[in-house]
Length: 338
Image (tube, rainbow, N blue to C red):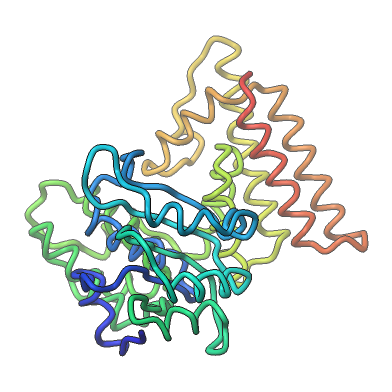
């Protein structure tokens, strides 16, 4: 089934009971994730419930096609409707879903996340042609949609915002729905219980340029060992037109700050992240990374980043590959206990 653009938000808030499977696709990964979570919670509010929620990938279904029908038909031991969440789906799964829709069994809600799909995509067509399936496009918000989202969140928090502050938000938040929600949430926390409207100064204190946020996100994810957020951040950096060398240099600066903090800790002192220029909204994450890394391991991480920049500039290796490989190596190292 297809839905008109104006019908999508209403469906996400109240999914039709006759729809068994929902495909979310498009260019906005944050919006896809947000809508997938909302739809899944309509059937099972606690998505951490191992008896009612199972998570799979498109690759797993390709390797074991029978898994789809098995999970769709399985009963929850604790009662309640089950949810099957599938990420990373693509046209390799199109034939499987087309067959499933011909003789669907069970009553589990199936929520599928994919990237951009063409109108001829076999996966997209399977959902659009199914009576019990629907395909929802998820694309970057324009300023009008972003303003509506910001106004709704600010109103729900019982606050108001000055016109110049709203203009600043629209200029600096970017188009990713998840990033937008996160930044507005930080802004509301920063404002706290103050009764005055959110001002331009408040926004400038909390929210930076969205491309800078993506660069910082990549560095924090790498040194925090967070592979999922690292992949998302690199994708957003690419979408924002950031060069691999710029990503590496921000990661180097982050590593240098951590090295200073680690060396200080090893000398018996504790360094406040604010002294290193770490934004207050990232202090907790930075402090956690300070405990993850020793100064010696950070020196090695910095060498990896420096070597990657040299490779990106002077060898035939694609710059994006050199950058991505280096950050993934650091993320793997971050997961190893000191």
